[in-house]
Length: 437
Ligand SMILES: *Cc1c(COP(=O)(O)O)cnc(C)c1O
Image 1 (cartoon, protein in one colour):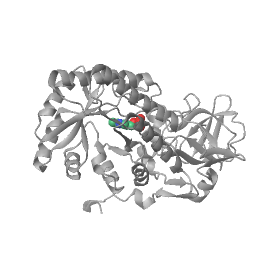
Image 2 (cartoon, helix red, strand yellow; image 1 turned 60 degrees about the horizontal axis):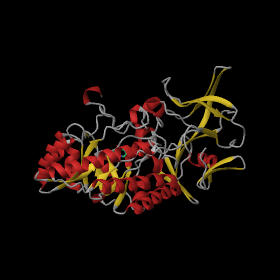
Image 3 (cartoon, protein in one colour; image 1 turned 90 degrees about the horizontal axis):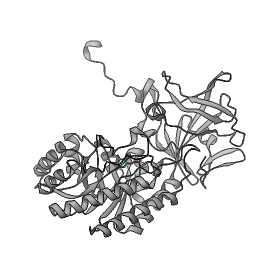
Image 4 (cartoon, protein in one colour; image 1 turned 90 degrees about the vertical axis):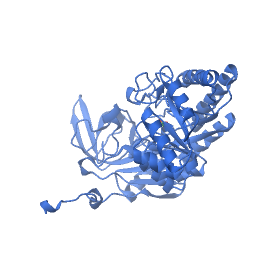
C-alpha cells in the first residue's frame, strides 16, 4: 500500500479522502469506484510546477486513462490541456467546458467523422499518425476554410522497459512514422500542405515506465531528428510533445512514487530537452507532456463485497467479489497485478495468499492473482488499490453486469460523478425489429 495523507489506515480501517472505505461502500453500494479529488489536484499541480521549471510548455491530461466530465473539470481548473483519442472523448472535454484550442486529437485511425468534428470544433492540434490522415485532414480543413495546426507522431524506435502491449515505439509499432524510415518525408509533405500548419512532433514511447533512460534515449533521437529537419529541409519544430507513460505503484514490486517524484521525471525531461537542443543548436521547443495513468491511477480504489470463498488447501484459495473483468479487465488483457486489503481488517496480518476473482463466466476473470490478504469472510469489504486508470475507462457490460458507479471524495464531501446503471440502462439501445414482435 502506497499511503498518503488521503489514503491511510486508522483504527484498523482503510480511509480515502477522509472517509472510511466501508462507510462509502455502505452508502453507495458495491462494486464501487472511488476517486480522490485531492490527489488528482496534487498530481496536476506537481506536473504544472515541473513544467514551469522548463519554461514554455503544457501538461495535457490523457483523458483515456479516466474519462469523466468531473475529472476533466478538475484537470482544466488546474490548467491542464487535454489529449483525446476519439469523437467521444472530444465530446466529453467539450462538455467539461475545456478550451478546445488546448486539445490534442490523437489516434492511429481517426474516422472521417472524427476529423470533421475536430476541425469544426476548433481542436488545437491533430496529431497525424498516417498518410491517409494527412491527406484527409488537408482536404477537410480546406473544405472548412481553415488552416489546421498539426503535430506529426514519430516513432523514435525506443524499446521502453515495459509490457509488450503498452510499449508503443518499437520498430514495428502500429503508431507513428519511424524517424529511421518515412517520418522525414512525411513532415516535408505535411509542411507544404496548403490547409495544414506543421507545428511539431509527438512521440509516446509506452506506458507504466519507471526508467528515465527510456525518455532520455527518446529525447536524444528526437532532437537529432529536429536538427535534421532544420538542416536538410529548413523546417522548424516549434513543439515537442513527449507523450506520457509514467509508471505508478500497483504492488510492492513497484516503486512508491509521489506527486513530487512524478514532477521530478518531467523536470528531468525538460532539462534533457534543453541540454540536447543547446548542444545541437536546435531552437528550444514548446514542450508538451501527456500524463494519464499517473494523474488518476493511484487516486482510485475499487470497493467490492466478498462473496463465495473456495479453498483448495495448499494449492489455491479463491476469494470471489461482486465485480471482476467488467470493471477491471487489466488482468485479462495484460496479466496486471494489483494489491488489496479488507477495508475493516486493514491492520490484521495479511497472512493468506489468495486469488481474487470476479463473477464473470471466464476463468481469466481475475482481479489479482496470488496476493497477500487478511482472512476474508463473506460480507467483508475488499479494497483494490491503484484502480483509477484504465479500469472505469475500459469497463464493459459483459454478462450484462452494470458498470459500477464512480464516487468522488473531496475533503468532507462525497458524491457520484458517474451514476449507477440500472437494468433498464443495460437494455436502453436494444430494439426488436417489427418482424420479431
Ligand atoms: C495513452 C497515451 C498517453 C498516456 O499514457 P499514460 O501511460 O496513461 O501516462 C499519452 N499520450 C498518448 C498519445 C497516449 O496514447
